[in-house]
Figure 1 (cartoon, rainbow over the protein chains, first blue to last red):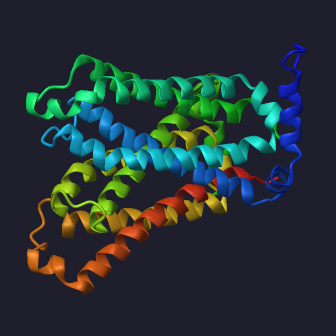
Figure 2 (spheres, rainbow over the protein chains, first blue to last red; figure 1 turned 90 degrees about the vertical axis):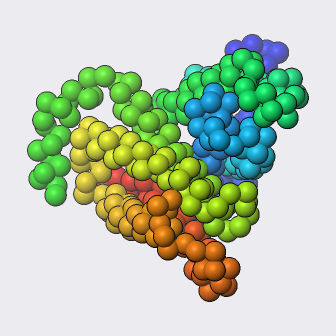
Length: 172
Length: 166
């Protein structure tokens, strides 16, 4: 890292790479593909469950069921899947912490993840506070539909960036 | 198989795909999104089959999610074939790929069996049947097995990259 002020980040990342856990994963033939598979399944479940809610908000699916019911059945699993995706992603990250953090696609993915998280928070604590009323009013406010559309766009972009990382890292 | 793969890699289509260097990651992205469609739909049906959620009947849950499974499988087929045509020697002779196809055939068979026997238009699913413990157990085991198959298919798919010769 060029800037002096951020040199400590480079230090930290180097040390992460050299922890016994990171070295063990990097050195094992099976650990990386197994953790990658867990990451793929977790993100598949995350995107799928988030999509169920987004499509309901956009009025494109599950229209017969109240929003609150759809959300209640799907969102808890989205959070569990997200936690597993972050945990598995972190295990993958630490094996080449320095190189990943300098990868443009990885940085883009992190930014998009933050935006997706922010979008969800704004929706949950702002727009969706009156969600119970949406069922009786039988319509979703435009802010909810915007959040759903943004969510879909962001998650598709995150998957694309994730794939680009694979293409732009130097093979070991 | 090797000769077919070699021939395929020399065709204009295969070479043409490589002209656009964003095409393979884009097709892989579609492949992953289609995986999300299938795995999540299997998961949502499984939650119902395992009685973890129960706000609607099993055929109702099946009618919500089975279409997405079939659409997802179609997208997986189209994107998968595109990836094979782009790099035939990477996939076709690869044992991980061949295992993946075997597991996929098994999974599709099971899902089709579910569609026919417990899907929205099925008449096999009566209230009396639902509460019999033996039936509940078989259905639960089936639900878990299909999900595990999906995970195994994804793992075999990941292994394709790791079992490249040289």
